[in-house]
Length: 138
Image (cartoon, rainbow, N blue to C red; front, side, top):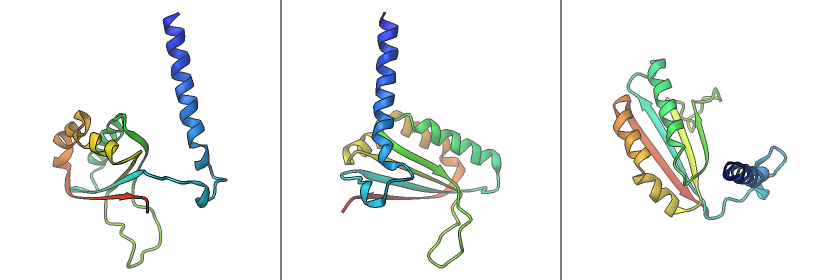
């Protein structure tokens, strides 16, 4: 009975989470999607060996593991897009990592979380440069 209840609660929580993301569907306009109070944490990594596929895979796997931090609400891991080269577009990074937190407190917890500490300890040898952009709504 406990396992059924636990399973039901997990499914209920997952359904609620998905329902909360419905405004982010392709049919929602920018004005309909509000991130009030949220903190966006965007990290760009330049690997020491940007063409080393094993290092890229290691970093991406480690970033996916890092997404287990409970205060992360949304995430995106990506590579430079093949968009037009312009003076204002920087394609020089190797991997980008974007997370969203409900607020500053959630990001503060993330920064000292054991998974974040472990991530830095075990992977910092891979990169030569990291730039972080944190933003909150206006």
